[in-house]
Length: 369
Ligand code: NHO
Image 1 (tube, rainbow, N blue to C red):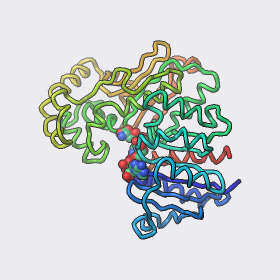
Image 2 (image 1 turned 60 degrees about the vertical axis):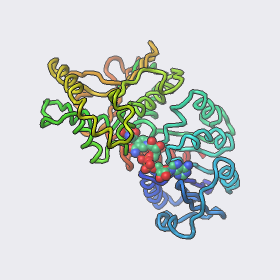
Image 3 (image 1 turned 45 degrees about the horizontal axis):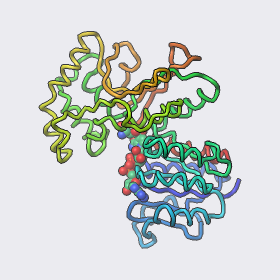
């Protein structure tokens, strides 16, 4: 196998975990002959100008030292650097940068492979999705690089690979439904547990607890507005053959009360949220009166072309109601599996499991070189 060059952009929570897992993989598989040639944060970068491998054990200190330079400008400077590498290049985008995602078609059409947990490229405008796949080797361009983005849905869980395999083997997707947000999963499992007893906590207290435990985004409104789940549904819908125009082209139930939409900060929002506890308690109690629980779910129906994200009630005996902690659950209803869906379930958020999905994709690229 040729010397394979890895360029890592984004070294935050997922990026750090990825670098550590990559170092372990490279040690266990010396024959993979991997050389990391770029590690970049927004403000600083380590660039191996002679394409010799960067040290994956001291990268963090090196990035803080005089060895670090300004990040390469995207896309032109980065593209020139990567194109000149003496062998295949895998670009790992561990950011949530939309402008970088818009450059994927350019990188791919120049033969650079991309693996990423960044949802922006695959869940924004349908035009970008089409451009990415048209430029990619696994989208019909024999001269393009491969693109994989398993961790954009369900972190390290095999969600997209399962869906692709169902479709490629000729099964017909009828419906996909599930809990796609670790944050929302944790919130509703603690606000409306199966036994109905959450110790009297209101919804706002549960949101604060989820934030303190690090489950939510720094600003919990980014979870509660439903857009993260809508982006995941958009990706699943497109892979199922539905041309969803954008993640806001279908109904999304936001859990941000109208009067708090203009809150100036996360703190101001959280302070005001308690005043709306009664609304959520009413929804919870109505579900309980029917022997059910309320959960925040996403679903898509291929036949009716309906995609939606929001609150739904589930019978207490159902697999969705029985979920624990911050787990995700994704049920695939297909012609082959009938009414007894194929279910993927487990941790769907967190740096280590997300990084695992990204490294798994990098290994898929290595297997194709
Ligand atoms: P961080 O910690 O903010 O790190 C991003 C880093 O990228 C920052 O250090 C930033 O400075 C750097 N950066 C941004 N733009 C850059 C640029 N142009 N050049 C260089 N560096 C740049 O974010 P995370 O947590 O590490 O996330 C990284 C990516 O993984 C994001 O796209 C995120 O959406 C994606 N991701 C994360 C998770 C997770 O659990 N952390 C998941 C999936 C994908 O399955 C997970 C999930 O959906 C979580 C969700 N909130 C849920 O279900 O509750």
